[in-house]
Length: 138
Image 1: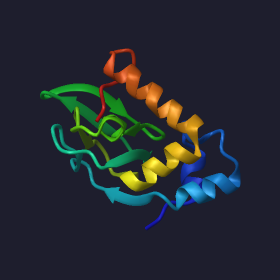
Image 2: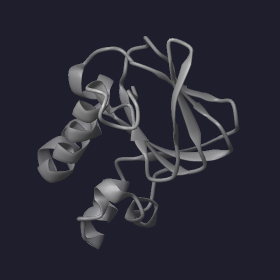
Image 3: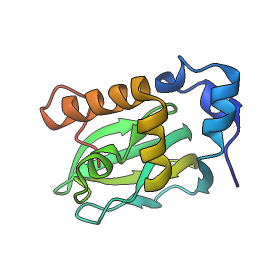
């Protein structure tokens, strides 16, 4: 099921977009509902998707150690998308959750059409890999 503009309106990285841009961008995301305990991404796996947590909570682990908790509006999966590598961490739903999922083709389109959002995602990725952010998410 595709996301809606209202799904994205409350996500901080999309706050600069107007209603028309939110509507267009929403079509690039699929919505998944997951139960607690569902592994959303696995450490070491190839990364082909970018995720935004719409509702619920998730926990980030690397090497079996809990790194951080995620809540609505947080995103993950950008590290593997940006560097074409493997997932740096495992993210597991800690509660029932709704997750917005964007695949690689749309992610590249987002980078091209909305460079200001791509820059925010890239800055978060840099912070996470250098220990300044909340986690080293996938």
